[in-house]
Length: 234
Image (tube, rainbow, N blue to C red):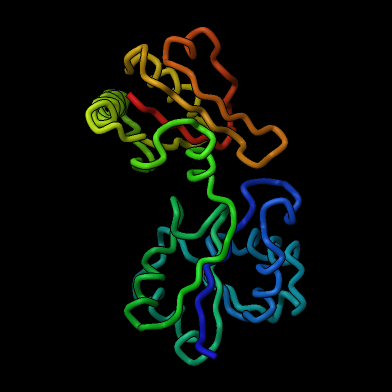
């Protein structure tokens, strides 16, 4: 059987595993001894919740973050190249989607190894599904500039692009900056522009609602420290 790099999804918060992660994922982890992970502590906790059979001290974890050098990434895949399955785990959701990992997958593809994405929650896709905005033509823009004038300029540019192309524009912000970010959206966009706010997706406190900018100004939600996806369509 061809050795495989499995891209292993995680929950988006503290929720029952079986609510969002297929049982098949729990079977897969028991074929893997080596994992590339964004955070070693949370990865161990997640593997335990998934029901990994092997003692965690026998599992090898390779940290992947902004400090990981390309040479290290190359070496991380040595077990895969020697014939063993490997897994990749990000902090929340699906690896490589608004998370680290794409460079690892690119190297694996160049080495002509098998890469298999496993089914799990993506806050970006789930937000788009529930937004009522255009799911045929959309763009994920990640984080916008931190500096206020540059951020407002970018918001207006994305709104204009959305209006011209009928393309849903999707972006995120660090949770503790959500409320200021929402205010920047409300003051920058046309009052008829549609805005979807999707927070705490898949959690009991989930909130997904789409309104015009005008309507949001009269009913601003509490988004403090809540993982949130913002979507606009002009």
